[in-house]
Amino acid sequence: MLFRIIADSYEARSIIITTNLEFSKWGSVFTDDQMAAAMIDRLAHHGQLVVFVGESYRMQHALMKER
Image (cartoon, rainbow, N blue to C red; front, side, top):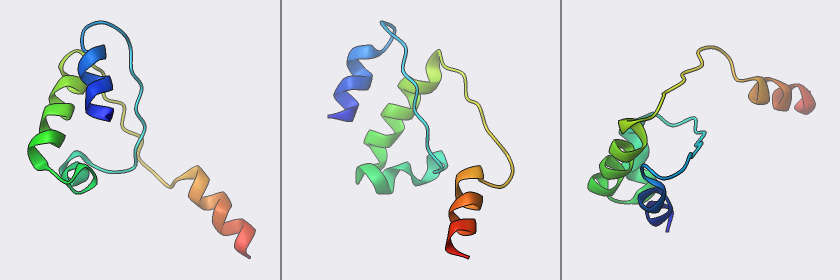
């Protein structure tokens, strides 16, 4: 279903996807490396990839609540 949304939106509208997984691990999420590669291709073709480096704000505050 997600692939259908991406395919229908390709070159027609904007999509924002956030993830903490690197592209090489997307195949395990979508159970098919070829499907993951097609999605990455469509997302990256006209897209902008923004990579944040450093500790996760969300993880840091989740760990603070445990203490």
